Image 1 (cartoon, rainbow over the protein chains, first blue to last red):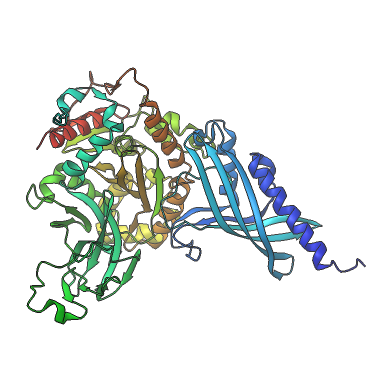
Image 2: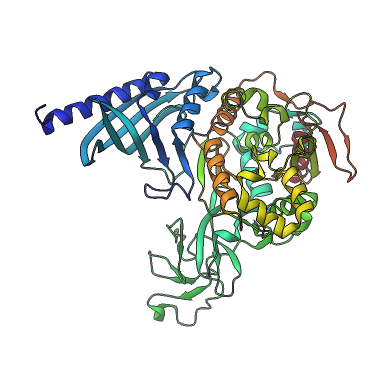
Amino acid sequence: MLAPVTDETLMRRIEQFIHAEARLQDEHDYEGWEQLWTDDAIYWVPANGADIDPEVQMSIIYDNRSRIGIRVKQLMTGKRYTQEPKSNIRHFVTNIEVMGRDGDDISVGCNVIVYESSARGETLWAARTDYTLRDEAGAFRMARKKVALVNSDRPLYTLSFLI
Amino acid sequence: MNAPAPVTRYADLIRGDHVHGSLYTDPAIFQEELKKIWYRTWVYVGHESEVPHAHDFVMKSIGPQPVIMTRDAAGKVHLIQNRCPHRGNEVCQQARGNSRTFTCPFHNWTFGIDGKLQAFAFADGYDGQDMGGLGMAPVPRVASHRGFVFGSFAADGPSLEEHLGGAAETIDRLCEHSPEGEVEITAGFLQHRVKANWKFVLENETDGYHPAFVHASIFKVAESGIGGLYGSKSTALTRDFGGGHTEIDLRPEFRKLDRPMGWFGTTPERLPEYTAAMNESHGETKAREIMIDGTPHVMIFPNLFIAEIQIFVIQARAVDDTVQHVTALQFKGAKDMNRRLRQQTMGSVGPAGFLLADDSEMYERTHRGCQSLDPEWLFLGRGAHRERDDADGYRVSHATDEVPSRGIWQHYKSLMETP
């Protein structure tokens, strides 16, 4: 029988996963990023606050697994003009905390800043990001990712890279 | 001695199928547009369903300035300006809510939901003062068509029905898609900002030439049938209703397809509740016609775009700062339909939308492109040789022709040349 994983080891694995996800996004590795999702995944960027009901109210992104696939495929056509040329972006992730645990699903929260440079100019994005990470045979995958932008209730420029 | 400011002669900048690039980029022209378009003509503000109950209010806008849409106890809808008549303070800071009064936090003046001044703080300092002229100012004229509320800052002028002209019928046509004959706006708005002039947005809404190219990426991966509507073989029509209102009439294509709900990429079987309610309400024959024809694709000048399954409200904030407020249309009495309307809208539009992120990229690139000096003009002549009048006397042409742009600019010129 394996020894129980210490909190610190778990925390390191979570950090490594989140940092790796951020890198795939920053480097526009769309296929690598898509592989991080579970089959029942939800990718959610709410509008008008963090606590809306996405089944009733409009969200900026509310993708199920199939729509995540479409999003990635569109980016890979080479004709998703808003990302051709691609924005130069860097994610900065801090304040990572484990918020809860339910079987193999671990709830993790963090704060994120993304710096974007594009032909329009420089845009700064800031968000509270909540993950549900599923521990599958020793590797994490994302069952849910919610990116609550601090300014989701105000006019926003195009957000077409993977946040 | 100061020379008088040069007067822009719009007839020199709008010559038939050529328009001058400065019309999109000149800040002085934008200031004149505020006076002659945004603060004069009828502008779409909001929908009555956004303030369903007495004392509901919601923050809206006309051009750069906020306007509060409210409903009073008697059910009447008001548009009032968010400015305290005392020292000019912005009174309301909430996006929406329900309140019998607005109180300015600066000196505690209190106003009714209709904007009228109800009370001064420390009233002895205003002994004998007439309160009549000291309310939060209303937008001078308010009118609605099928629940769509418009405001005009001009005290006199054409009525809303005169302004809408032939385009009013498209709103009526839209409402027929509700089993109860009513549209509702209840899903909340996305606010998508672009660093581009508002007229690029306005014109693009009924430009049937760009989808095959700008949206090729999503048409391909989503295996969407929309692309064919805007192909060179399309039987759909562009139409100029006059008054700056334009549409792309997709009905010829959907009638050819002859499949109820084909316009929405689905079938009556997948929307059983909606189909039953439509049959009940309209009778099967009429319901079938409506569900074959689909909803309109119409741009009501200057800022309401009804785009089949969603509405866009275009807000001009500065010469290069435009916000597209967008939300799913919801049809009263159509729960299963409304869910699909929201899901499809969320995928398509807003800052991350499969369609609108690419449109918005083009708006910004075009705005930057127009900074180059040569050629000074944009050429909007596509299809001029084949446009014609339809049975109602409106100019129509092929789905990809620039009849809408030419119509918009003709109306724009008449507004801007009016002192």
